[in-house]
Length: 169
Image 1 (cartoon, rainbow, N blue to C red):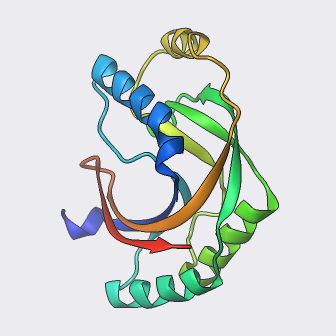
Image 2: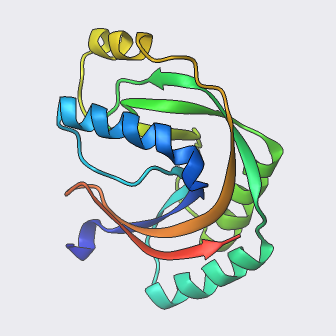
C-alpha cells in the first residue's frame, strides 16, 4: 500500500449471527455487479493520518472508555456515490453518537459530517438499477449489537482495507 493515500478508520463490528444474511446479500451483489470485496462494518469515524504508535496508544484509551451498544437498521437505501452505492441505513441514537465522540476526541478527524450506514455494495450503477435491486429486498429493520471496534488501514485508491487491530468492547 502506497503510504501517500493511506488513512485510518474505526469500524464498529456486530455479532456474527447478525452478519449472516447481510454477508450473503453482499456476496450476491458483488458477484452480480463485480464490486470490490470489503468486510461488513459500520464506519464510526475515518480519515485519520496519524503515526501508528500514537494510534495504537489512543485506541487503547478509546477501548477503555467504550462499551457495547445497539444500533438499529432502518431499511435499505442507495446514493449516487461509489462508497454509498447500496447500503443499510442506521438510525442515529445516543449510544452511537457517544461512541463517535469518544473516538473523535482522541483521533480528531478532519471530516465532521457523519452519515451512519452499513455498505453492502461499492460501485457505480444507475439509479434505476439500484431502485430495482432494493425493491426486491424485504424490509430490514433490526437491532444489531456492536461488540467490537476495529482499527482499519484504508487505501481507497486501490480499494483495499486492512483490519490492523480488533478491540473488544
